[in-house]
Length: 476
Image 1 (tube, rainbow, N blue to C red):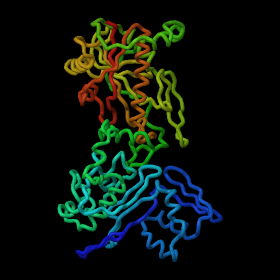
Image 2 (image 1 turned 180 degrees about the horizontal axis):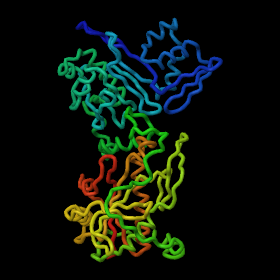
Image 3 (image 1 turned 90 degrees about the vertical axis):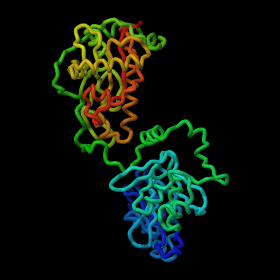
């Protein structure tokens, strides 16, 4: 594409390149091996001009006109090869002033399609309501969970165009509002539309996204979280923790808060496994809404409950994909690769043998450490549980589940938080079943915590964050 420039400003030119992680390897004959983020491509009988073009694209953005000039009449078959590599092809738009791309569309999926169409200057356009801006490595990034590409806005002109689209407007209106020449505005908008972050109105001046019943059920945050946590795609973000994978990750348990430590009772494992109700009977029992009894738990019951549900049974080496190794543990509930990033804090209300306050559970030593005995904080935690449970009484005890993000983030990347939520579900089911086996009730609660939990538990946010709550009491 070369835009007309009636005002004498620079023209635009389309550029192609391969993503940074893509490697092009030439075989002994006319074959190519192209390794992308998504997969490996083995190509045979590739013309020399195509091989040369791909090697040039691996070095940085080039125009198709330059590739054609280098190959004489143009590299036959290059279009076919690029069609197979859509998840590795970056589409950029530059000006003929030699200063490099002003906007680039980087693949966010394995096989996206980038089709640039001319936009009329009076055709309504606007940002998708799912689109969001963020910064990465000094560049403004525009992305959407619905889009096949992540857009890098690398020049003030493209930034002005993209940020003028909060409400429906036209290319002509954007040019007038931003001062960007109309031909540049139109071409930048065409790239944003092709990338999937900007919408074009239909003949009735309506946007399909606004009337899509399937999208109506989603908000931006949930859909972005879903798409980012269900893929191993690269998003331009730095590593979640900055931790060297060879280090083996953070320690298996959180230690050393410095408060008074209370060892908990350890029941006999043989007795636990020999008796008690069958799993099927526990699973068939009806779930019901929490109704806190007002009765007092015992320290022995707390000890048995945590021993059954969350103690560290053993510690040993764990192995992850890619040959990474780390220190892993085994506990009664499931965790991917034995990572076990979850921590448990116990707020004691009515429990003989334990001090009223907020305690951290050490699953390795099976002990409680007092972290906060401030009555106002304790009362606030218990009140939140009472309100969430819809009752008139505070529970006998409240468990707060937190996650040490670095424990999973160093290896799972963008999938770390979704994995944590899966682990919370596994832990909650284990808490529920063990409570029922002991004649108790463990209820997950939808607590509106805000930052109150972080303060009360003395968490170092965002290194450790609250991810769930569970009330422990007797059946009413």
